[in-house]
Image (cartoon, rainbow, N blue to C red; front, side, top):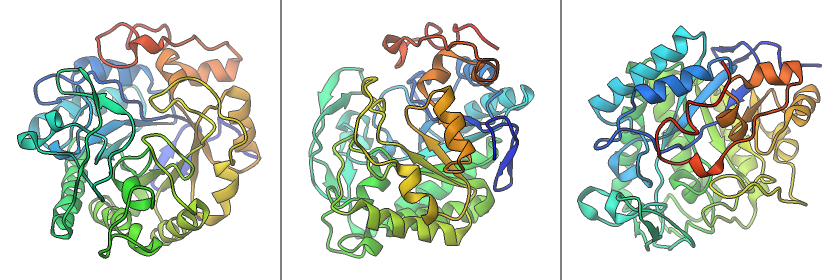
Length: 364
């Protein structure tokens, strides 16, 4: 029976414990250019006692950006900025992987090259809104459906970003296929109405994710590549008519590739960009899909110290990712181990700003 403080391996990445810092969008990259900076290096280094840090979502191209102040990994300046962070984390004894991200339709023309429309598998406007490049709340727009001829270039953006992540000194990468962003939009039939080889059947809708995975694996090797998925997630107006069939197929394909780990989000937590409510009467994603994936499983979504210990002890997950509590508890593993109550977080300082609510929480 495993416990949170035993070592484990995600492929070739050795974790000193099974407490992982989840990817957390904080919108503090330097402007212009969305460049990672020294303040971010301090923030990540403070949390280096995690068994693994998964970086905040990081756009693979300018087209992939959906919010102001989010970092990229598609320019030399961005890559150099990330080196500050990987060096700081490694000097503090930690491990960090970069989450590769394209938001697709969850954007606004002010973030796009030349002020063009956001792109998506299909021209379907999602409910809700985002922030424009000048930090103003704006409604989502009806996106432009990607042409089939554009797909190879999109895959190349992910491959090039993976190369930049290697140059920046990361220990691996995680492909963001969750939470209603571009790869998830292709997967689910509520957002993908295409009639080419990237739409229709489950095999076709999964094609882009798997082609991106293969491109990234070609850079890093399968043993340093993970993926994040949200099978029952509704964030960013997502839905699918048969999520069990869809994601069982996807996980079988990922198992064949021997990737380092699978990162699954539990739908009980509404905190992905929303509030702190716990959703009742939803499936247990780790339980539903554990048998479908042959490899290490990282579970995220609404965990506390006791439920995290339980899911690892039962074998439903090999490690647990904490998000919001890692914001306010840089020394989270120590607090869990010693039974110390968690410091509450301030949601009002989650996005944008500087040190307040970012690097000023007591801890390591």
